[in-house]
Length: 162
Image (cartoon, rainbow, N blue to C red; front, side, top):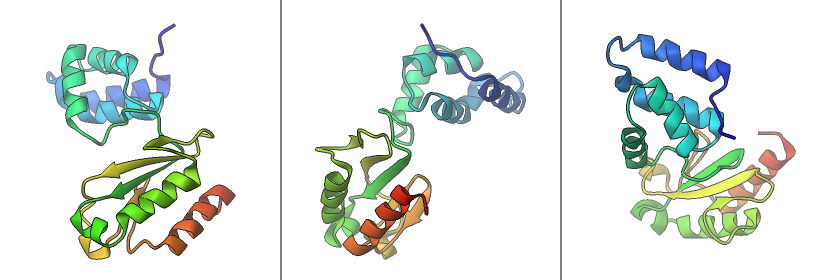
């Protein structure tokens, strides 16, 4: 049984498409974001739904979304940690942060925890070198991350304080 976009997501996508009369493919990136919110990940079914909305081929949708690293390739946790491991962050402890997160989330490599609460991804650069090491949790930036700050942050997410 194939999944389809929710009625709410479909309505949002149709509003976006109105901004590009005669050029529905121009809405491809924002419609992909909507599909990702709905499906939790961009997969073949999401590609097909986006292709139909944007009046383009599924192959074109696949080529576009795989070019960008902002779209989920695997299911993400409720709290998605993206840790910068570029040079500034690495020199100031990013690898220690990644090791701690793997242990805290019960992971052997990047991905989502079994309970679906957390996920981890290494990213090249968050543009926050002055606050290295840095990480994003969902869309919130954390800078000058230490082991102590990180453990408190995880506790806050687990307890619902964040």
